[in-house]
Length: 97
Image (cartoon, rainbow, N blue to C red; front, side, top):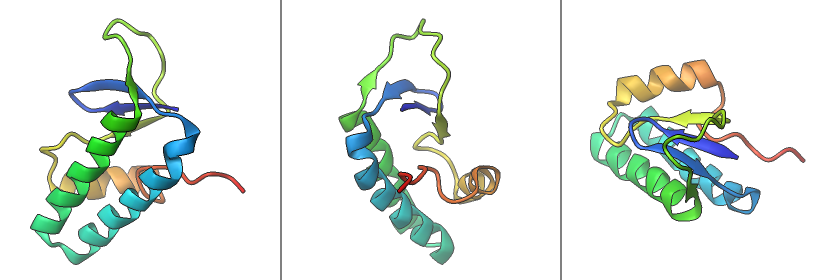
């Protein structure tokens, strides 16, 4: 799965890591619902950090389409809420059963 972190580039992340990313996504959703800025910052940082840890950066000149787009680390709670409205159920899609 190709994930773009806005302003930072694309990362190819294997499906074996999607469960962990979904857990971090759920934590981010909890932080958004609470409106707690500190919790939000920590959760967003952990999610983006995991994408970078588990993912392999693609070259800047790569023409691969992104499967999903994640906000950058400086995104506000309102910006992420708007992105979630556009995406639907969280930032990271669940694994089909």
